[in-house]
Image (cartoon, rainbow, N blue to C red; front, side, top):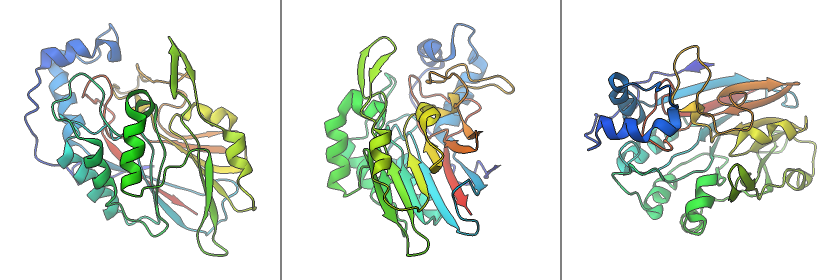
Length: 307
């Protein structure tokens, strides 16, 4: 894995209008009582969330993917559009950076708008969708939905994506590419769609039903929002791509993520995971949850080269 220049797409810092005290107080639920984000680093964490943007590149030939069949994928995860760290200008910058990679395929992995209580700039659904509609890739741009989309405004997100003709994959699969170089792109519904109570959810995901739509021997790439379902993904899938975790969002070196929204803790928190020959890439995402802070996990766009 190689990480691109963290300043390559950095805009000028902006004044968020938030105080360090309010962010630290609001972030205790994210970083824990140990207070990993101390007052001296909170301002830095706010700037990292709002101003850094890295390209994280992976090159691999996973099982089931033909050697020498090159495919490039840009993955944009967890936009969480809304200021102070993901205002409309920042969303535009993300789209420009994604297009600059010139990938064969672009995928957007859900959680489109900010829901934390520190939002300083509301980005309407129509606005972030219009920006995402500028994404270009020869094999297309495909989206899935995330848990925040379901919990806070699923109808609005569906409407916004539909208005700009961005296809939403929910327990569906599509065959892409030219004859002799085809592959299946599959996407499942969200695994946490309905909140039933503390740590209890009902998903709308149907992994077996989705894979039944795969009707040829061509390789399969699977899009999921939450990585937890990776334990159920069969060998038939060459690569699973996920978001959701934000890479932990607040991390200090050599310490596992304090906050990883997964039943498996830090197991699927970030990066390239290989288990029993199966491959998963988890993006650290772009936006933030609970507080507009990132520490040790800068906002990233993932660029994958297969074959």
